[in-house]
Image (spheres, rainbow, N blue to C red):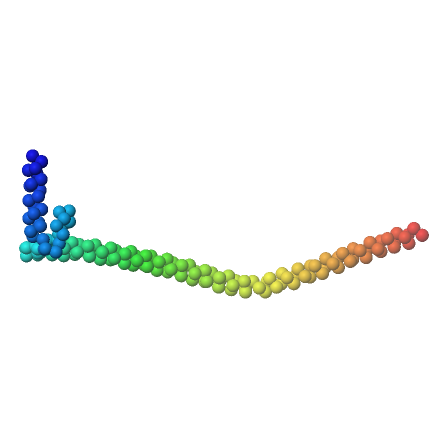
Length: 149
């Protein structure tokens, strides 16, 4: 049996040796390249259609993702614009309130000046009262000294 299997294995090797060019080695472990055959015309058309369909699906997905990214950016820009408008309104209100406060302060300034003047006068009057008190104490002590004599 072993000889029949060996003979069967040797037969394809001999056929392969006949088809090889004469310069090639006769080693059965080395494979030789076979001539590439083109697929049938119908197969090429079907493969091209399949490739173009898959490429269209891929490009559609890429364009959809890009479009969604731009839509997201547009929405973010709109929200940012609204926030800036709100901040602008707040700043306008603050500016208006500050002007009102400055006008009220300017209206109160004469009264504040009067208060400062009165405060200075009170301080001077207080000093005069202390001096008068000190002088009256001196007079009292002199009077008591004179009375004792």
